[in-house]
Length: 245
Image (cartoon, rainbow, N blue to C red):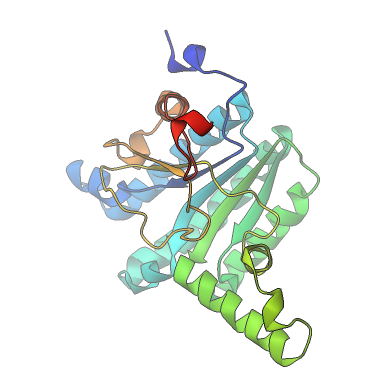
């Protein structure tokens, strides 16, 4: 029996975030170059997106490339950018068939022009889809996001568009890259690492964290459903005690 059969469809996270980790180690174990792991991980993205769609997840955010990743060997960075352009171009038709809308968070201005063009075209081509929103975090880090938000708030205070007394949690959220997107109820990280690596630090404040030893290229729908089952067996208290729920 699949884990999917045990899932309570009335308790599905609206938003799931995934740190897709382990591509390089997976490739190394097979005697291959790291980029082979990245290209193999594309199928895992399809699997996770399909699984999310099947059970009614509305938002799926994937940590695809962090600001720190720019420090990797140039050969790997270039290969990743080429893979990104190729993958996006190849997937537009499938995204539309499955009513998937594409979104981006991150400092996209740092990406090569070819990547920016491919992303813009895919976002435009899928903007009317309404089943699942797939959000790619590219050239993203939470510290970049929060620093950027503070700068914008400071500028708007200086320009008298808002006052310091207006600043509360709701206003801060409106200056984040995820404005208008609900916070993830569940974060999944593959490869056995147990940290969140500068990802959605504000948004993950009350998220459930799920870590699996499976490397990302081996991650399949069944692994996704297992994470949902684990989530559904937890008690989410948000600072309260059990008796208050």
